[in-house]
Length: 328
Image 1 (cartoon, rainbow, N blue to C red):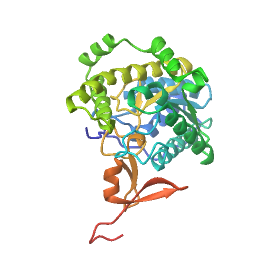
Image 2: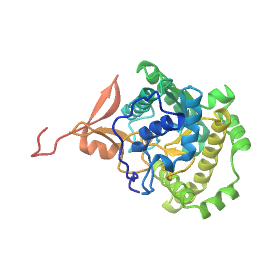
Image 3: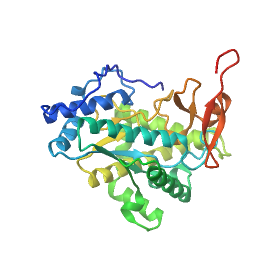
Image 4: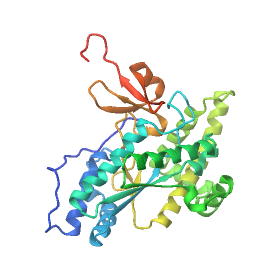
């Protein structure tokens, strides 16, 4: 599915106008988000098309408080070694976190109290369904926290299942969240049959599960049946996590790493350039092109286009290699 960004012309660099009312400041803040809108909708985007986000942002502006964004994501690395460099964060996460922190810095120039992003890491919520050990999820989350601290990304924070239910066994924590917050399978099936967006999400997650089943030894048809079944569970748990986040942060502006239609209550955000609207840093590797720009792609593809670079002794990203007959 190709990435589609709604047509948008950004105004000349916004700056704080002391005479601007909360509505004007909120629109200027949303202007900073629009160029990064992740969507498969080709409807032209404008601030007026996002009334839900404008209302949420305006509430923070009126209170002269930092705008709070919640972003479920950054769960863990894909278990497929053809897609990622390992189970720990790498340059893909570093670039994405820096982007989010820089976005908050830009907002601060319009709204002095600034903004902050609460990254709601959801790996433990569905680790058992995607075939990732909880120990790998812990290691990934711990490394993210270190990365945020060491890189001085002070406008970001991390929130995960450990912050909600402490040191209880993860299976108990997953069951608690599922039982209290998840929709039923029947309700989910009805929604997927009725709504194109829900169907696209279901198909996208099923595809990820099929791709990530690197160690499957059965038939392709059996794998697809199993992944379709698990996709419902992943969506149930993701919805449960979203409902828990909304309960904990009721006034926050909800971001999403999935494509979202124009005007939806969730604002889809592109963290990095990628050829697919569903690509994320945790399902891919970062490649720096020969022109200095960055993109995301499966590790196997990036390895054909560039050379591996290590950072602190670990695989980090790929550097593009100029093709024969071109200048470096």
